[in-house]
Image (cartoon, rainbow, N blue to C red; front, side, top):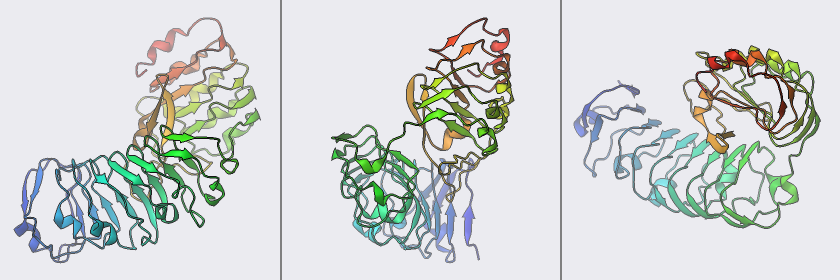
Length: 379
């Protein structure tokens, strides 16, 4: 009997009716992602004969309402209805029925509205993404205790104080909470976020002092000469806006998978190493399939998997801070601006044909601009 129906990433069209699904009593997985012409037409009172463990319908036209038959599913571990044009509230019964086996929940890029319950019954969720909706009110404190990767950005949450001061140690590793309406002082409870490696709180209404427990990031001294030996798989090195001095170590050129190099706004001296042309992943046609930050892990694969750790990276793109998540694997970027670099622009930069952004401004560079820089046609 059919247990997994996966026809994702096709151009199928037509209608899937109640009759079509009624025979699949053993169905455990439904994957229809990215099939905008394929329609499910089912009456609201239909009760499915199956209880799905995997529901992946991302970028599939489900809207405008949250389908009742999906709300009746209570046992799923993986759930993705992102970017499906739903304009609706989510009934409390749906939240209360979430399985303790939940690992991945993605309802981002819709128009869901309303408030969230506390969700304390979730024993552990690897990733929850509710970003880019219209959720409001209190951010439930239970999310801090039971989730590793949490994306709540671009909503209307206003009360974050209980969430940011959990009563027990949080398992959060990535917290994305910008572009909301959270207000008041940041609570001095950051000692409870012992596993946190990425935190975004920008564009809210926080006020007051930054609490001592959150720590600061004003690194100083020299960039280690052997930094290139640290991790050959490193895909992004961002040391922006610190107090680093000295020269750029030539060992940086050993990062064959490096796609983002951002050393801007420091006090770095000396010349740009000509070996910068050895950064193979910045050449056109070469795709880095795995990216890692050594301070916490950022993993982005060619095909997004629910169990993949996915961070949000903020880079200064066209002098404006831009946020990248899954699409970060396509970004090829060098920013050495606002330092004290001298000498000529090395010819090696001209080899990096896939570069989309290059900022060397506000340094002390001299000499000629390399003739071959015209090869950087992706800029």
